[in-house]
Image 1 (cartoon, one colour):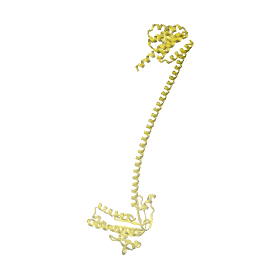
Image 2: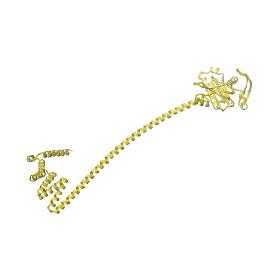
Image 3: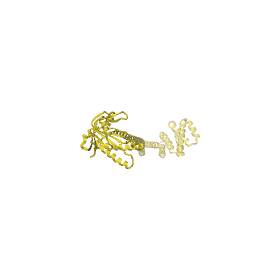
Length: 435
């Protein structure tokens, strides 16, 4: 690194000195030449003087050219030797000193070959060819002509090689540039793909999370809807619940062949005196839950409970328009209560007995209320069923004559005769017995 800087400083100094020398007049240069002891400066001044005097004073020009050549030999600088020799040769050739010119051109060629100064080599060979041809030395001229052609070919080869090298370097640089651009492009594409992959993954993850939350919410909504429908079905018949859901109201309907059953516990007040409120409610809930289970298996609609009274009806659709199912349910309920009574006696605990009344006839059914709505039935059939229950003995099923006439062949009966009811005329009643 320091060697390169040093060489550059030397060349810069020489260039500045040469510029300074060219700017001076010939007398100034000659005076400066006599005073300097520096060989490089002596060569530069003598070389400049020889070139300036070549056309005006060939004698001095030749002397200064020889002075420059001697300075170059002292410096052992083949480039300077070649330049000084070829200037001296040109001066000799101008003055027809051909022998001297040939000698100097040959010397310039040798020095230029050593220095690698191809233009001086080519110029020297060309001059050697021309001078020998002018002197009739055709063999020497031919030889120098061949050398000149070889130089031209070598120069052409070198030029082609240089051009090829430059082209190859340009191609390599272009390929390197394309490779860098490709790498940059691939890196950018990879980065873009990575970013897109990240956003896609983030989006998919968010979508899955949202889908999961939505599915969870839908499941919760569906569960709430199912519970709401189940609660509604626990209160209303399916057809009525569907109509209420769609229309938000239910039209009252008349059913000509309905069977109404009243169940009322006997001695409920007395039993309540011997039980804690929690025990009383638990026992009542246990019984009513079993009633719900029994009537649910037989497609009978529970209407309501009033205190310890349980009311249900059938025939409120196209099914169960005969009292047979209701009577079977009543017998099953009494059988359940009989068994529960035996169990409670064994446990020394209070028990319930029930009266059951059944009547068959027309009713009107509908929903009343807008907030705590209730499905209910009205009509004389409902009142008559209540009278049947009131006139019943504990543990039995009291059936009106209207119901008996429809299903009398399906059960065993015990005729009770005509019995007066509350606010009613005497009515025929029958106890239903299982076959």
